[in-house]
Image 1 (cartoon, rainbow, N blue to C red):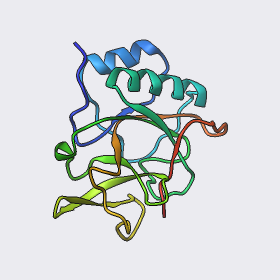
Image 2 (cartoon, rainbow, N blue to C red):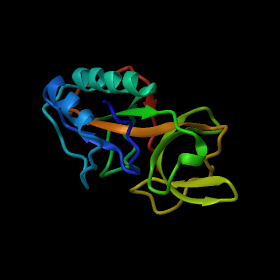
Image 3 (cartoon, rainbow, N blue to C red):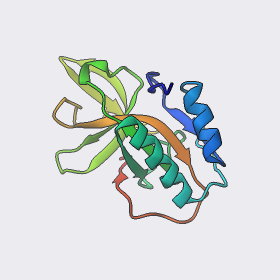
Length: 163
């Protein structure tokens, strides 16, 4: 039976084969490494694997823009799968993607909940974002991270890790 990622930390996968992906999901969620590792996985394979994960979770795939605000956890070689989650199920430390007032997807970590709104912070940022996350602007929670080899970029949906 497949398990949804219910940990407050995203799944970290630097996979070389779909069999390893299946094994990771059958055994439950894995915890992320403290730094964004590089992988021999091509960008296209990382996106393909993330899409398979997103399809299983009923979610979407985003690549990460090269802003540096989520380093060392995420960088421009990271591809994430997100899952839809009820707002009240979000927890401090979750990595989420929300839509900014400008309509741009932003990926940051939940920092503190105040009056039913979440303050968010990039892992490499000194201050919280100007915008709070609400039920109206949340896109989803990161449930899997795929690290790809440096180099090629893709035209898939990109979430900014804003500084």
